[in-house]
Image 1: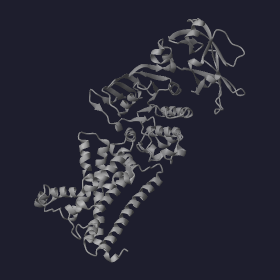
Image 2: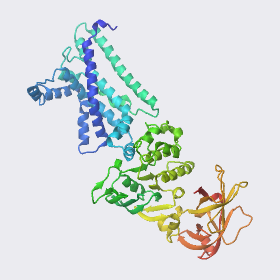
Image 3: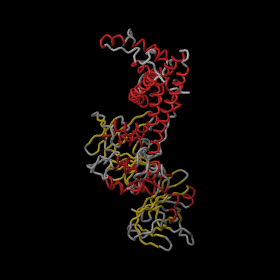
Image 4: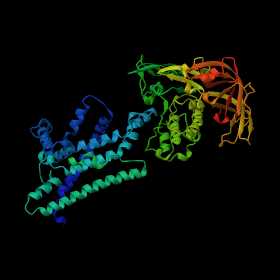
Length: 245
Length: 362
């Protein structure tokens, strides 16, 4: 069934690299954005939230196209970047990461936001009356209590990056060894006569990676719950719109 | 000894709170019905809420002053706040909760002292979800004490507890107040509970303080009903144990300088009563029956002779103040008052069951 001869190792390594870089990069930003959206009120909050969530509902190809307009060699940001710094983004592995970050960011922000909203603000108030600074309150109370939601957001971002196709092929292209991730490799081998065996192998591998990611996060959550039995993960994985991927 | 001075106005839509009071060390009970502004007052002192104008001062330190534009951050106020629900951190063990606000070895308050004082030793490694409501409240109290506060605020510390638990938490609050010797403000809408804790009361009504004094002074106020709703009045008298009858499980108490005795039943869990020991009894006015004659062959253990010193018309009922060595408020129906022709100076007997008395040791 799975023939190791046909494994496109470069696609797998690239996919994993893109997914890991994406989720690690998105996490701190998402915690910040999620906290602001959950706890602060300001003018234009709904609009900001809508813009942040846009890539989740927009067709990924549209997102890729917009990224190309912005970061392409003639783009508003891409052009000066190339001219002054010699940095080229479009059609590089950096573009694959940027595309992934853009589409998976809303998922992780959403997950973190819900998790922080579920932390009782009264506990943060209690922490303040006990002399704790904002920062201590955040890392001793808010963050640990929101942890399960943050972990599931991280896994979602990882999974979404692994599955990213539309934005990547539009913005980063389908260059073997540079931007061809697993989904793109599957697509390419499907287009090739006699490529069924290779497609099938990659399909199996991507299922295994996704499953492993989810199991790992569940294990991680359970481990925390075992340590602190009252801990209840408020955020079911499905409720966060994995469908969008 | 640092005093707490509050002179603030808080304006909210449809509600104004105006307070100008000084609180010394020891426990002051803040009593009022919901909406009276008690919790808003505590929130302003803790910094969770901000007054519209005025100032709040502990000793010489201003916590808030609208004129000088001072508003200390909540975490810089040194105010211990025990919330109604305890608000323990669910992911931290009891000991971690206790240590949360502790300033380390330099702190004036020692962790072990607080653990011993509040008897928390067996709970230290439990999570808040594994302990009872009363224990949670004790941990919350300990956690606040360990921040070495300059004032301690307790917001409805009894409301989440059942009757039995309430009785148990009271000694701990009193011990805590003695340990720190700071002003302790306890908010409650339950007068009997508050009185078991302290006799110094600050009564709030519609955002105003209507009385701030020792309860017995408040009770002798001629217009008592302006201060307290009639239904809330409870007699509170301090007496001395005169005789203990272990066989009948009955204690005889008597007032200072008075030979009239009050008989109270012994609580089952308490075995040791010493003559001369002080005790405070609580008795609801509606549990007292007025009679013109002594009644023989009755189950009433207490029949105290006295004279009516004050009468207050409260619609369908009449509140009578009777001097029987100490003052007792009694409640009778208007019809009975009319039939008995109750007037000031009339000698009467106050009848009440020993079972109707609630007693605490002082």
